Image: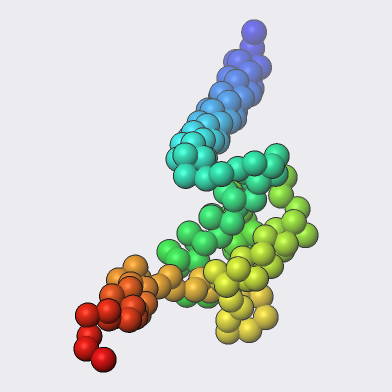
Length: 148
């Protein structure tokens, strides 16, 4: 083999090896993402009553939208939420995603803010304010021992 051919062969092999290493890194990152999704899905399944076939995807995606909005503390565009949701379901269609947004808006969990296409999560009421604002049973019940 001539030195010229040997250098060309070596360069080709090094290029192929580099490509394979990059593919391995990409696949390992994909594996890590899938393992994290599986962990979150299992955790969510323990708390949810999923009865229909598509309910699991819907619940996971709706929760991912709510988590993203609560973490951001500012309004997020629909596009960012869509890509967040696609991390749970890469085949998610835009129209299906928009139906999930509509469902969350109807439930009062999110609202459109700033302008068209930006979303914010509703702040959940603290548990203490719910109990403090509700009248106690003793206060609202008629007192039978009061002299009339």
